[in-house]
Image 1 (tube, rainbow, N blue to C red):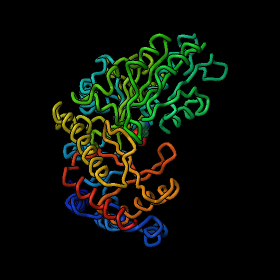
Image 2: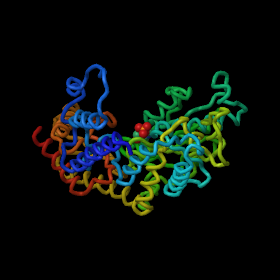
Image 3: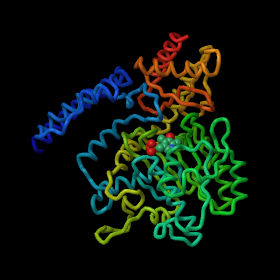
Image 4: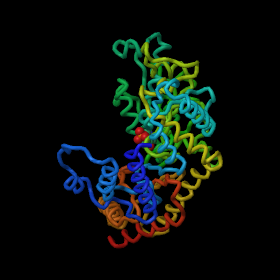
Length: 466
Ligand SMILES: *Cc1c(COP(=O)(O)O)cnc(C)c1O
């Protein structure tokens, strides 16, 4: 290896090791905010270059006070997984190999690893083994690919080639979403020309699940081909749509059923929890994240589609120089990208390191830790848990302010105080008109003691504010 590469990698490894060693005890939130960091970092492009190892030292030192320990055990913000050791190390290899995953001929080695990763994913979740799999940047692009495949199939049945001719003048289709649809699906609809607002919204129940009866009625009363987007894992409550009932309604209407299962889909990998997503295998397309609950480093998502031809038709680009090798599908056929990072490689490493039992233990362990946290909160007189803790999400509200508005203010003050304290990190949300602290347990590192430390910190911050 040349000396520049060697010394830069050695510096990166030393900084990475120091960072990972700090995770158990470091402050979870950042020490400095964006503005403070820019005040010291910003400046003109240097006129002359620098030694690579010195660049790595400088950037590590500069970023350090602004890093968030989201890969550590007491970060409960958004839905953010950590990094399994094998997945993190596999990502380093992906960087060193620097393969282009567009075509199999560019890297048969990583193409084969990705093909196996796709197969293992389908086995873990219980999806049809003939479904095609693409590795995307995240669940948003996985939603885009799955919904685009549905758009293709519905319009092809109506005699319209949407990839060639676009949507102008096309037969209309109905897009049906639950009232608690994630912004990612809405963002995808705006990108695909289906319209973020031009949807039929189905009412949701108290936990955020689409009402299957209302879906059935909407589909039965509709006259156009329908594309239904269900959700597994509400970002606030963790609730999962009733897949059997939704699949029944879609089947009766001949609708395409897409599942946004960014994190909730992984419940299928647990014998204890798979009943929450029973019937998921009956859908037509599935989208999920690897960087959330599978604990693969950012970034990575997965799309699977039952109808291989629809998947391929909607994503494939063609050109004389795009040389096919053999009959196996190429990585670029199932994702919006052409040149692409081989994101299936860390997925392979994660699934191989966990195995079926380790994956189930990861998912079940996080859910048990979520119940542990909820129990600590419920044991306090004036702290409420707003959701039914079915999965890994908990919504906490601090009361005692004297009025709903005062409780909203108190809840937001406690969240800010906990973030400033640094023992743990939680974000805020609004659930059914009430401010709440949002808790997501999605990290393989989070143990019982971390939950107790985080709960102690939250309760202390709350009592100080009373
Ligand atoms: C996170 C999330 C998404 C978007 O996934 P990205 O990886 O951020 O693109 C979509 N749907 C749900 C339910 C999510 O939680």
